[in-house]
Length: 250
Image 1 (cartoon, rainbow, N blue to C red):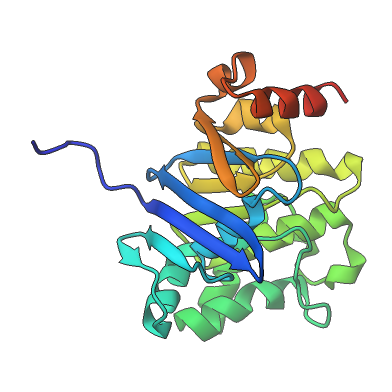
Image 2 (image 1 turned 30 degrees about the vertical axis):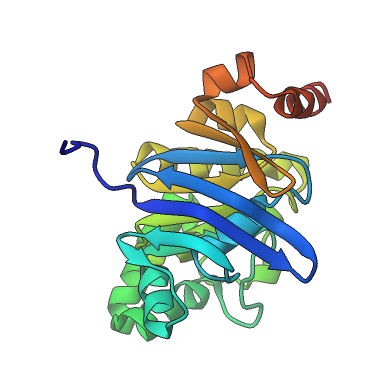
C-alpha cells in the first residue's frame, strides 16, 4: 500500500540518550509533520530539552534514529551541518552577543553561513525585526533591551537563517511575567504563518491556542501524545493528569 501521508519533517525512532549513568531519553519516538506545531511539556528533568537538543545535535543521541528534513543525523559533520541549515533554535537565555548591536547579531549568521552580502543581510534582519515588532531597536545593544525584547531579537535571529523548523527551549522561563505575553504573541504569529515548531514550555494557555499536538514527557519517556482538546480535557495517563492538575491549578 502506498500511503498519501507526506514523510514527517522530523522523525525520532527509539532514541536513547545517557548522561553518565543517568538515562535522559528512553526509547523516544515522535513524528512531526511539516507545518505542525508540537508543544512538549512535563516535569523538570523529564527529557524535554534534551530531546529537542538532540534534534539539532546540540546533544548526541546514543541509540535510535533521528531524521530531519530527510537527512539522518549521524556522526559526520556534513549531516550535522545539513540538519542545522534547516533548524533554528531559541533558548531560555537569549545567547545574544552583548558587544554587538541587535542588527549585527542578526546579520552575522546570514553573512557567514549563508553567504549573503551585508546589504542583503541587513534587509533580511530589518524584515524579521519588523515581524517581531521591534524594528526601532536595531541599533541598540542587547543590554539596553528588556528580557522580552532580547528574546524577540533571538527569535528574529533564528528567522534570519530562514529555517524550515524552529525549536524553542522554554523561551519564556527566564522572563518577568509581564514580558511573557509579548514573546508568546510573536510565537503565535509564527505558528499561524505555517512554521514547523517544537516548543518546550509550561505556558499552557499558549499550548491550547497554538498546538496541533501536545506531547507529555516524564522520566525520559513520551507518556502521552494527543491533540490539545483531548490532552487537556481527558488525559489518559495518571502521570499526565497529575502534572496538569499541578500546573493548571497554580
